[in-house]
Length: 378
Image 1 (spheres, rainbow, N blue to C red):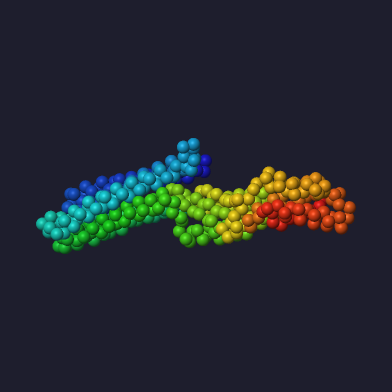
Image 2: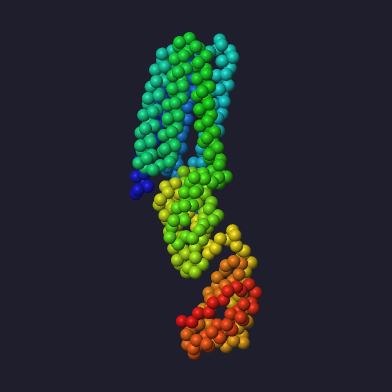
């Protein structure tokens, strides 16, 4: 229910902005033709790019958050990413076309346009309306903690800034500096191309799993270190998927913890990161009893069935070994360290307990890959 309400809020804010972008885009293009302002036409294209972004926001809000399915086990967020790349490349192509025409007119003075009052009034209206929609969208973004809406708000403000450039260009042309409209066009073209490049570049970086910026990664690192039970961490990896961030991390816990406690700590790391950092949607936590980047690897060591067989063979001449209740294996520092658990009744006094312990330790350590051996009575 909460997700549905959040989507409805985003939808309402974005639809209001998209209606304004549609009206402004068409209005500026028509006014640019009627008022002889190439800069205003370019600004109209800029406004329509905001409209396309609005559509992307709506699409992402509705479809990007869909649950994973059999064909998309990691979700659908990168549908938005692919669309954003396409939008960015299209904006760059439009900017190149408009820029070429503006430069051609600058070098051919007889082709320069002479804008009038209509173009000036429309540019002024665009400045105030786009600044208003920026503040409206930004308030909603802050309330909903939506980075997607926040980005869209700044896109609206960029349109207001481009309209200021157009206003100055038109005003200068009306004052007799006819080339200013063409120069203003180049300024707006630069903004369109930059927006297109930023959209395409950031999305392509996401597609190749580029990490989050260093500041955010350090924030995540320090947050994990503060969680009770985490001794250290390594192999911290981050990437983006749409508006979300995904995290993979190896946390180091005490080698003496139970499996269930280590698992519980990993669940706390995952849940607290997702709860405290809005952009993080999922965390994969790997539990390590040591820093496996620095110590010898245990990957080549045998598993329990094989090592128990070898230990039983080493204990064949030790009758008390039959009373061992459980063998705990610790794969650490490239060795297998073992804890042997025997009943207290297996020894008659302290001296016999010491003799049993020494005999089992000596026999156990004759097996290849065995490290420290601990014998416990209960």
